[in-house]
Image 1 (cartoon, helix red, strand yellow):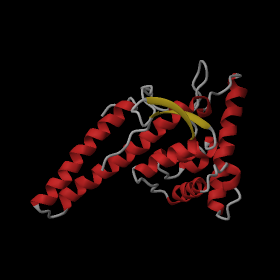
Image 2 (cartoon, one colour):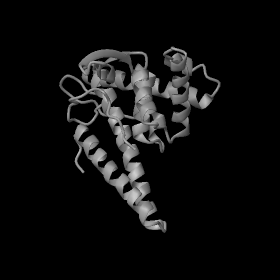
Image 3 (tube, one colour):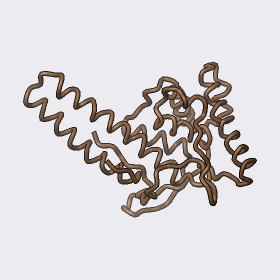
Image 4 (cartoon, one colour):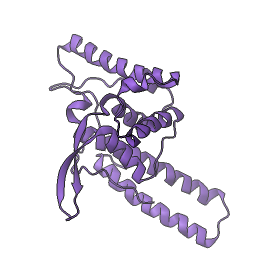
Length: 220
């Protein structure tokens, strides 16, 4: 199926780099929970919602007259809307639970802050949220102590960081489906019609994959 692009256009070609300074780049150190088998593209989206979910970021939208206009939307709303429009979900059960909590808040017109998630009865969710926040503080403090330079976090450039994370997540999902199709074409005894359907879907997804990789400044 068709994957929608995030509304923000003309993204920079650099791949996301979550901890930069004015003159130097701080080493990227994932939170403790990210050192396991979590899928990075999923982790990146959840991390942005936890740290900056209620913060407003600018997006470009098309109004009813077909004109481009800039508007503000919360990070939570932006990410959840992008996933909903393409019917995408998280493969990691923990991330799926966190996404569901944020979606529930949106349905009640409420942007949940991390403090709400840390009051959840699910202790796995509580531990993960606490780890993300503590790791973020540790990176900033250590980098300042070592170099006397303030780190430039995602919050300083959300209009770039959020759509890039969405592109990366959608690219992961596209590649996941392409791999599934390849396995189906090899393993299954398909009719000519079914094979043509799968091949057509694969061609479409390869075109979408190319578009996303270009937006992220990657090469195939």
